[in-house]
Image (cartoon, rainbow, N blue to C red; front, side, top):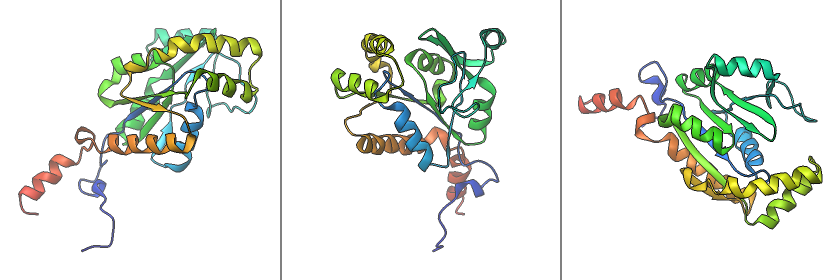
Length: 221
């Protein structure tokens, strides 16, 4: 028996599977950005979808890494040219997912992580449902959610109040998602997120090498 791990991508000189779109949504402050960053840091086979947005850059953000920052005119052009898989208005600013980078990543067998709201998730499901697995992150309580928003110190009291007033509507969308994680503890939530990603990668329809592989087994090879 070989000591080398099985690599199905060597069977046909191509990709072992088609990539998947892993969508994370939550009300602001529930932890999806923290979980996204942790998962990306430990999983080299996962890449982040970089959205375009019309909102100003925040301290610490980088162009092309956190977002691609564009003006309203360029955003409208992308919408009109159907260059966005999804787009939505969130707190007076527009966000969208460019089509071409996502299509290229999936075809190359890469998994793409999306940190988007429920509006974007619905549009992605309509456009690319077979490639998508969606996860909603819930806070343990509304009190804890408010405390997390305040502790970030990124937003004014008025913005925190707006985010809390919107949280109820966002939470009401939980049943539209494939998986639910209640983020009591970030380590436990991350372990659940890893398990979901592993299971989704193993789905039969995504393992494109299997048809030829099983045929070889049936042929006695």
